[in-house]
Image 1 (spheres, rainbow, N blue to C red):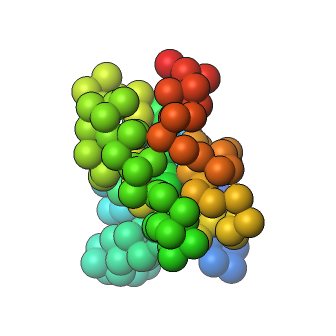
Image 2 (image 1 turned 30 degrees about the vertical axis):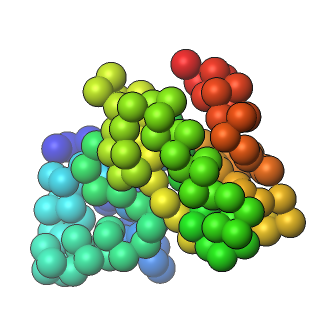
Amino acid sequence: MSEYREIIEAYKDVPGGLIEAYHALQRKYNFIPEQALLEAARVFKVSQAEAYGVATFYSYLKVGPRGTYVIRICESAPCHIAGADKVIEALENALGIKMGETTADGKFTLELTECVGQCQATPIITINSKPYENVTPETVDKILAEYR
């Protein structure tokens, strides 16, 4: 818990410090540990419900464990029209999990996201924020091989 406290305390006097602390926690752990929410509520003098609400409002932030590699696929209209559903199916089949789940070895998590701002090259996936453009079901295995 003291490690969470150190990270959170570093942002207590910063404008927008709660969100900045959550980003720092996520950079360190790849998610926001639930115990850190309690510490954030104490440090920022907000209710536990508010601390949780802020952490779960933003799609980029994730409370609770997730894989080392977070694969996010854009679900906006341009990606959908370009075949995102087929890419989702290929990812799920290749990893043996469904959207929103994490592989048993803790290596991969699949998540949906809104537009990532690269609509010129749809569909888009990101792996730990690294974008992959014009993804097709046929290119999924090659992309995943970089992380296996």
